[in-house]
Every structure is written in structure tokens, then in C-alpha cells.
Length: 318
Image (cartoon, rainbow, N blue to C red; front, top):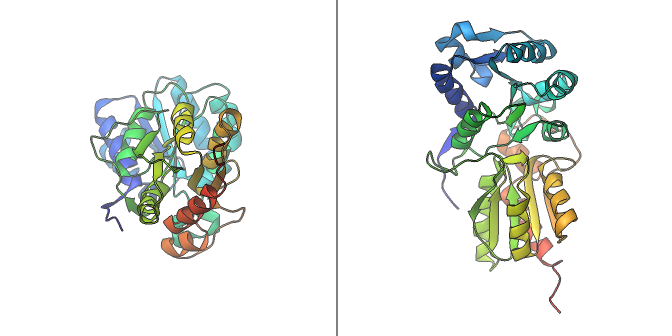
């Protein structure tokens, strides 16, 4: 098993905000009474005059951010992903996206790995809710470094951006020097027999799966799809053209999430056998993060199982 350093993705979010706060006076941060959990409190402590706690009023927060963007500010709003994408979806659609306002959304505590907070606080649908909106960019970084870079990159994009990150420490699979480009997927490690496309914390699980598959004589290519929208069609198509089989892995509902976005690309360009690892049309529950990841089938063992299965469905040449 690979040994990874562990770090908080939400700390990458907070570090980027503080850094930008010191260099760009137009950056503002809004939170919905969860700044200690989302770590936006670190920005508040450094720049109190550019921090607004709107209280438990997510819909209002989106509209306030929209107004600030029209005044020339770059507002970063943050709360748990389930709240910002659910409670405030109409405001995100009508105020932010229709008008292509320069508002950045931080969706914290994504996935079942939120753990003991339970089903009400585990965001499992927000990738779907955000990627269906015109003008919205959707980022699901894999670790601390990518979350920091994604947050910094969001400030350079003219328009709405949604960034998903988690609660618990996750494996660090990139470095401070690893290139990050919005809209450009990362081929983490090459392979020839099956393509594994993963996002968020599932990238580390995919790398663990690659090692186990190698012991079984299966060569897996691992792609880190940190940008779900706009999706990098070329990298996905190039990979599956080589491998002829696909597995997607996400800590999100398999319906309409990252995996569905990948399969849309494949179905329209190069159909190959495919399997999906993710939450299977159910809600989460209370438990430890690892218990829930195992129960809901979002571990490296599930990726291995799906990879072995999908390879049996590959067409034999001739």
C-alpha cells in the first residue's frame, strides 16, 4: 500500500483566500455562520473589513455576493456544499449564472467522508446540481495543493465557479509544484488495460487500486479530473482509445455526477465498456469516514472490482 501524507483540503481553500486577501483588495469572503468549520475564519482574522457573516441565510448570501460582484469585488462565498447547492440553488441559477456574475462558491464537507454529521450534512448531489448550470465552472480538487491552486485559479475566471472540498484530511497526491490548469485533466500515472477517471479524494483511492491491479497483471491509467466542467474531452478520449475500458470513481451520486459527465463524452465519441464507482442512489448516514466509505462502496477495493469486471467486457480485436 502506498503511504501518503495527509492534509485538509479546506485548509488549501483557506490558505488561498488569505494569500489573495493580502495581494488583491477586491477579494471578499462571505460565510453562513460556519467559518470555523470552513476555515474562512482565518481570512476574517486577517481582513475583518472584507469578511461578512450573513448568518444562516444562504439564499441571501448568494444575492449579497452578486451585488458585491457588480461593484467590482470578487466575492468568495462558503458553507457546506449541501447547503449552498441545495438551499441557494435558485439564487445561484437566477442571480449568479443567468447574469454570469463573478461569484465564487466554496462547497465544503462534500461526500460521505463528512462522517458523523450524517445524511443531512453529507453533500452527495452538488456536482450534478452545479454542472447542469450554464456559465458555471465546476472544480473538484484532489488534495490540499490542488484545492489551494483551484481557489487561486477561480479568482482569475470571469464568471461563476464552484469548488468542492471535504472535511477530513485526505492523501496528498500532488506537490506545490505540480501544474494545475482549469479544464485540463491530469494523467497521474499511465497504463494500457483500463482507464480510471477519478476526482477529489477518490484520486488517491484510484492510485491504490492501480497498485493492486498491477499485482494482478492489469495496467491501469489514472486520470485526475479536477475540472468536471468544462470537461477535458481530449485527455479522456485519448486514454480510452488506448485502453478500451473505463472506470469512473467519485464520492458523489453516480447519477449526473462526474462519472456521468465522463460517460457523456465517451458515449458521443468513443463508446467503450464502462463501470462506475460512487454512491448508488441512496443517502448517507452517521459513522466514521472510513466506515462510510467502505459501506457505500467508494474505496480502492471497489475500483479494483469494477476494473476487473469491465476488462472482461472489452471487445476482442478481429
